[in-house]
Length: 102
Image 1 (cartoon, rainbow, N blue to C red):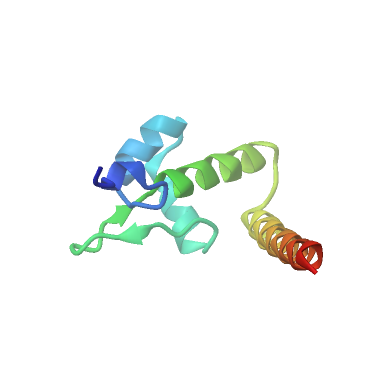
Image 2 (cartoon, rainbow, N blue to C red):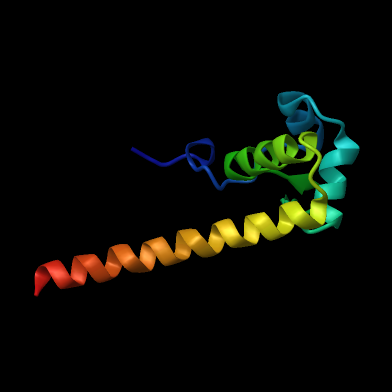
């Protein structure tokens, strides 16, 4: 069976308007997230923003934090720390896997 783009969580398929409708936010909010380097979607050949399901979930997470009063700079730092923790957890899992084989 052939893998299709909509099967890929990282395939950039959705426009700003579509994502704004899904998340019940203003398109300007999504554009601001891009400009402020909080959630940066892919770009089409025509330079239009295109969101993957992964980026949509991230934008939803950011929207929830913003709704609770957090600044975009603070949210960006939280996302950086979450990514760092995920990378460290992956390293720990790899080390455990290697140690289990020895």
